[in-house]
Amino acid sequence: MAAVYLIVTIFFWGTAFRASAIGVEYTSPIMLTALRAGIGALALLLAVAVLRSRLPQRDLWGWTVITGLLMVTLTLEGISEGTAR
Image (cartoon, rainbow, N blue to C red; front, side):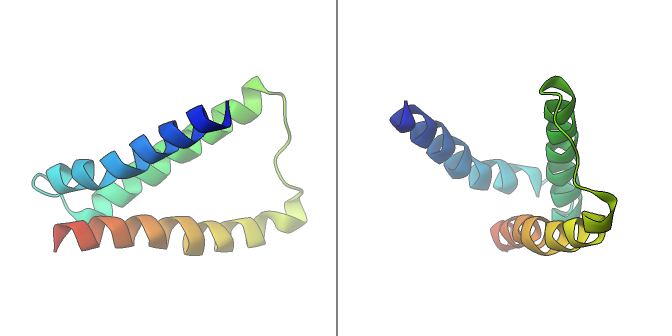
């Protein structure tokens, strides 16, 4: 089962660059980043609801936002901007 997860991850990671290359022909890299991060956030919130999980405690929300912006948004922007150039 671990091999299946690995193959799926490699597939989506590998196709992300081609999708970004196609996307930057029609819009800016920052818009691609916003769409990817927004859709990902909605998918995670849906997963939280379906799995009846909990969000982090309120005192951790600041750190959650900071790490999300630094780790996710900057990475996605780097991929989009790098692919565009």
